[in-house]
Length: 242
Ligand code: UDP
Image (cartoon, rainbow, N blue to C red; front, top):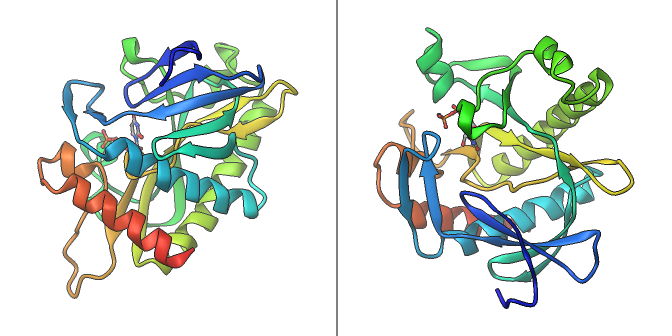
C-alpha cells in the first residue's frame, strides 16, 4: 500500500488504511494466518487475495439480499474499500453443526446438526483470550444496548439463511461462522470484517460418503495441508455460480 494512506489499524489478517473520504477505509488482506488466539502462526502466499475476492463476492451477494454491510468495492485483488465503522467488540458465532471449540468445551459430539442454529457471543479481546460472554455481562459492561444486540442477533440469523443456501448451491455445507458488526457515521449497524474460509467452516458436499473434508482454516488449525488449494476451490465455485 502506498504511504499516501495512513495505517489506522493492523490486525492478525488485515491492515486498515485511511481513505481520502473520512467515511471510508481501505482494507488490505494479508497472507498471515493465525489460530488459537495467535499461538499458531504461518504465512500462505495468495491467501490475502483469495479471502479478499471471496469476501467481496459474498458481501455483494448479501447486499443484494438487503443485508447492510461495510463493503463498497474491490480496489484490487487484495484490497477493498469499505465504509468506516466503529467496531462493536463482540464476535458473533453462529453454529449450524457442532465442531471446534464447542466440542472441546462441552460433550456435544462433533458433527451434531442442530434443529435451530446456536449463537455464541464472545468478547473481542485478545488479552482476555476472547471469552464466551452472556447477554447480562454485555449489559453490565455497557458494550451495546439490548435492542442493538437483538438487532445484531437477528441479522446474524438472517445472514445464516442466505449464506446456507448460497453455499449449498456450490456444494458446501456452512457449519459455522463468525461475524463482527459496527456503527457507521450515521450510527447505523453494518456487518463488517470479512466473510471467508478464515472465519467460516465449510465442508465439501461433493463427497460420496460422510467423510468430512474441510475447505477452510481447519486445514491450518489441524495441520491438514492444502489450504491455498481449498480456498482457491471455494473462490472458483463462487465465481462459477455468480
Ligand atoms: N472464528 C473466527 N475467529 C475467532 C474464533 C472463531 O473467525 O477468533 C470462527 C471459526 O473460523 C469458526 C467459528 O468462528 O468458523 C467457530 O469457531 P470455534 O468457536 O469453534 O473456535 P475454534 O475452533 O476456531 O477455536
